[in-house]
Image (cartoon, rainbow, N blue to C red; front, side, top):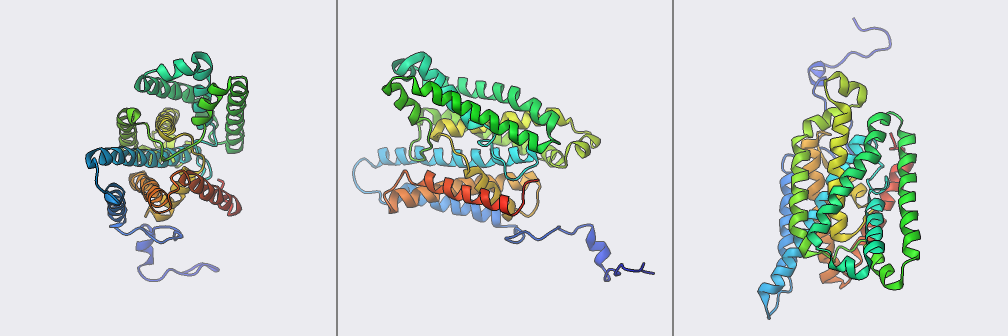
Length: 344
């Protein structure tokens, strides 16, 4: 007999309640072939990028240059997307990106200090691969020291975490700006060149180690996907299920630092691109399981960069415009999340 004020469930509803998918997503449930469709769309855009407008001359050289840039775009898109999803899982907040918390500002500070200490000639003489590996190591170490204790101990205090991260980012940017302003004009120009993102500028010497490190980090994130699902439940639930919460937080932050350092070294700092891609991935994915969410986000990020760069560079002859457009759209999406009250 139903209690007063409670409507009885229809026949069969009780059996289906345990497997109900939850609230409807804004773009509907993900059908089984959507990931394959994203991969096919990325392959099609890649073919257009490689062979569109391929005229006479040294075709092998042209194809090599295009392949290098294509691999860089895919690496950057997937790295930024996966890093943002991981960081949002750790912080339990859909409006945060590693850039907001100061990761990109930390990278720019490292570059500024290196130019100031070694000079333009010394900076240019540094082996790019060795410099890149050293930057990744420093980024991982400093990120663990700065954010590991912060998020590991204060994940339940989201406002304080956000404020601390923003303050650290502002501090890093202020120190970078101060050092840059006391440099000579040539050194200042070098610092400025690494302070802004350019998807049309891919350093071929960093591509192989960068792609290898990014692939390893993404693979590690996929292996940790079940633990990330538990981590997303929150500290209390995760600890009760046997997860080493603090250790998992530090591991996730280390992966974020690696992926951010790879993407920033290849194209420069990006602020809101990851936020846009992560939002699209959450809207398209059929569940919040990271085994689905991470590949979806990586494919969307790579597809946006390849398709966007093809459009702006080949059709509109504006290769430097893509970074401005994606940052603008990401900023609008950030405001949308704020207005919709998605800060959790």
